[in-house]
Length: 371
Image 1: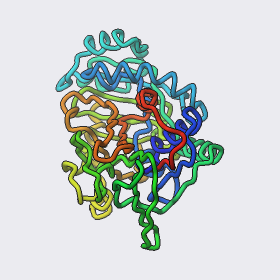
Image 2: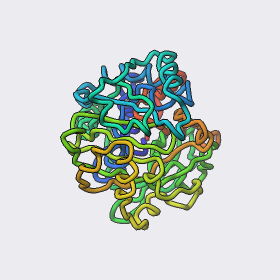
Image 3: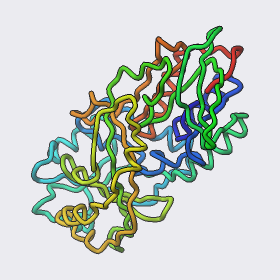
Image 4: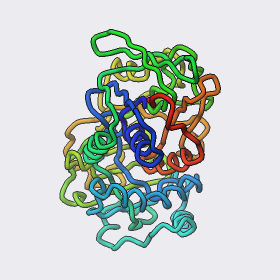
């Protein structure tokens, strides 16, 4: 298993517990689990509202949210009021369309009470709705992953990178590792699950890369101390060049994101261009002032929020879904490397779509190791 984020950890646990696979090794380039994209994001557990232009993504979120709450109750934060507001101008959906869409996917929605509507400028906001949507605490998910991986006997190799994937002998794959001290090592494995998110295609050897085209973005999540008027709320204004302000449980703060200002830079994925090096070299100058100014037009109380710091990370999406905002999983097997699979999920609740996909595959429990 390559990648110790939520997906890599959860798949390793699933394969051990549900499929009976043995000798699983998890390779993680950082010094701890769930410290990159799994942590540096909006922490939203979707319930479909965010995707009025992608019915499939919205419906799958509706199906998966209760399953996520059931399986990770310790990590789910529900004790806040979640609002979706529809802008009067430049929105890709009207309030009536949004309400009809929510009924079609079976998502709870009702008009917000006047005191909550009063938080918004009525000249810019057509309608405000009370909805059911949650956030997760990535530190709690990391604690769960550490416990379960240990209980399953999964070996974890921290501060280790995979640099090459190659064909071996007797149906095995050769995995070249680079340790923190610069030394190299080759492991042999029957199966390899490539769950490195932005790093999916950063290998040499016989690995030909994913057939699905990927796009990377350097993104900024601004951490804010919410003013009293917004402290118990999660707010999204949509659907166009708008924003979200969501609770961020690991820090007791809120994240502020803006469709126009959160993405700083983007490029199409290509072999040899390391997204994480791109992030490291990028001048991470905050755009929070521009976010707050624009958000303040719709939600004046945000002008009283206090900026704390920003989380910068690489976000990876499928090029084919840029137009409809769909967030399907990427699950590819590599013909040139039988037993090698690449997995990318656009949202945390997609993990159940991955489980369903894995259920269609037959894995031998008798041959070699799993990385």
